[in-house]
Amino acid sequence: MQSIPEFINAALPAVRGLMPYEPGKPIDALQRELGISDIIKLASNESPVGPAPGVQRVLESGFDDLSLYPDGSGHVLKDALSTHLDVTPAHITLGNGSNDLLNLVAQAFLGPGRNAVMSAHAFAIYTLATRAVGAEARVVPALPADSEQPYGHDLPAMAKHIDRDTAVVFIANPNNPTGTWIDADGLASFLEAVPPHVIVVLDEAYFEYVTESGYPDGCRLLAQHENLLVTRTFSKAYGLAALRVGYGISHPALADLLNRLRQPFNVNSLALAAAHVALSDDAHLAKAVAVNRSGLRQLAEGLAALGLDQIPSVGNFITFRVPDAQWMYRNLLAAGIIVRPVGGYGLPESLRVSVGLPEHNDRFLDTMGRLLTS
Ligand SMILES: *Cc1c(COP(=O)(O)O)cnc(C)c1O
Image (cartoon, helix red, strand yellow):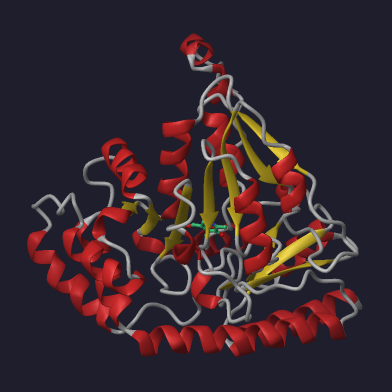
């Protein structure tokens, strides 16, 4: 092994202490490692339906302008988003994925001596973004396994953990990897309890997929709660994860702050154009949502039939428990199926599977059945 150069010790302690984010294994990597083909990836909550058909055309026409910088203001996309969301463009901050927004908030409001409150089993980027800037990630125990939202956010407990040094609260609705969600009443009472100096980040990465009645639209809460930042993305239901485009919706003063902090060209031209086309194709989005609803049911019923405990999910994935998660993960890989271990999320006995096309879901369930009885 190579020795570690001395300058590494000069990096900020908060950065040296970071644990890397563990992404789902790429298809190429499994192909190289095991020399197998016909691999399906159900590991990163990507859309099995893919982007709207118009996206390809707009990407091809974008080739002509690759030497030009993007429109740093993202004017056209912001205009379309503002109509779509019924907010002004001044409420919007575009990001290189919604992940970018989470980092921007941390950079703007967190640092040594401050803390961010978040739930156990919440999206990994919250702790990462918080610790990267030297702040404390205050992780609050989740709701118990036998509750109505097993492993879900315990909002009253989270509110109690807010103190003078708390600058940010992260909430995922629904949460990844649990798939649990917060209803309008629960969210409203929580927002009432949060002091006005604390930014509430409401991560709605799976917003478009949720069809439950009583599921709140964060954008409609901005008027009453000036400290709210809603984040959404084109990576999930819109099928554009590769291009990295997400956005925040907030009070214009917060958007202005984040816009000053972000890289001037944080969203590239192709991503801006593709997102604009994707946003205008309601029929394609409806199809992606419908495929997800039936796929979610297929997986939920299939896992139940295999006798496996699962966390009821409203996202495009399900986390379920297996007798030996590491063994099952490896054997699924060997069978050409990539799922996601969630030990890093405090769920070492579980795996997360993303909803695929019906034939993918079938293949996953059949393989699970075979492995469970082998
Ligand atoms: C996937 C995901 C995101 C964001 O992904 P981007 O590709 O960066 O937009 C944000 N939050 C949660 C909970 C997610 O699962």
